[in-house]
Image (cartoon, rainbow, N blue to C red; front, side, top):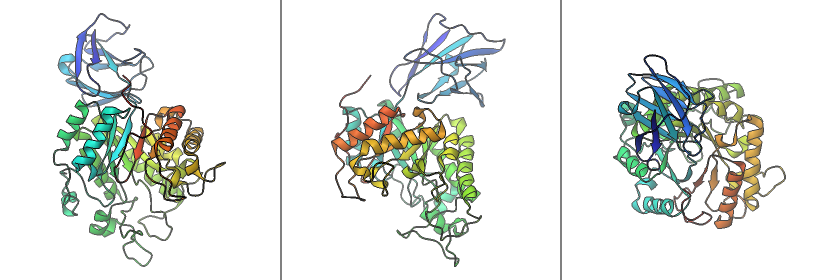
Length: 426
């Protein structure tokens, strides 16, 4: 039996020959593959295995069968990493693949922040010195700029390539992966000023027919338009090809005002179906690239039974993605949560109870959630600074809930080690 094991975290993989340790069989012309957890050797049910264009999921024993002539296997599993197994590593009859657990603990870097040497190096320094092990990199911002050179003609036509901040994104990702860093591509989806202004037929309008602009003077694309879907999913596919481990869709919502006109009647059902439909289509088109998919949602969506007026209903969105990433910033709960009128004074309770409520409504296991946590000064209540205690309390809440890691948000990309554990847990 061939046995794949990890040589370095998120880096390269080596193959070592071992005696058979599992009972598995293959039919003529096929190879039996078992995916197991690298720490416990327990089989991983539901792992995704891609072979010769065929997408399969492992059974209860972590097993699939692939054709002997398979050139490459791609493997990933929830709560774990992802890897590629080359043709020379497959065979003769059985293959055991050890997949390591991955619990991303991330910092956010904007489209400009990742290109700023000082901000990027500070983030990497913190990753090297603390429990952090991941970066969320903005590849399309809410104005519509795309960070890397895109092959999409539309991106150049609308001006989305006028500001390219990372010329060699694949090279950057290779360097990050060599340091054991899990990488997430953040895509601002329907809030897209450049697309709205350049393609007004695809945009949100006012009732008098003008282009609708938010309070910042920026336009939005219409979430009902398939052309908008195709454009954003195309960018996501490019990011997956570049080597990102995960694609995260943000601003996957409708503008939070009823005073707009769209290409379809914006009933609650239509709004919810549009967002869930987008994610379903994105999942189909991204699945061959062995990449995880996540969606950002408002914190109140975990509490509200309706779609919060923006199309986000957790019961409909969660089944379409690998990870749900609610934005649980205490400052964003401006009307409080049940039992806690001032959430900024109770960051632990705000995060923990919101996640518990989301789990109650969806029946999803805890590792299907990875929340955004607040690492910026309060803006809604008393402008208190979120320092070591507040950050540590939020992290403790996420970890006691059992989420698949967490992400820290600071819009200025300014982070310190406050609230973080020092050193690495190997």
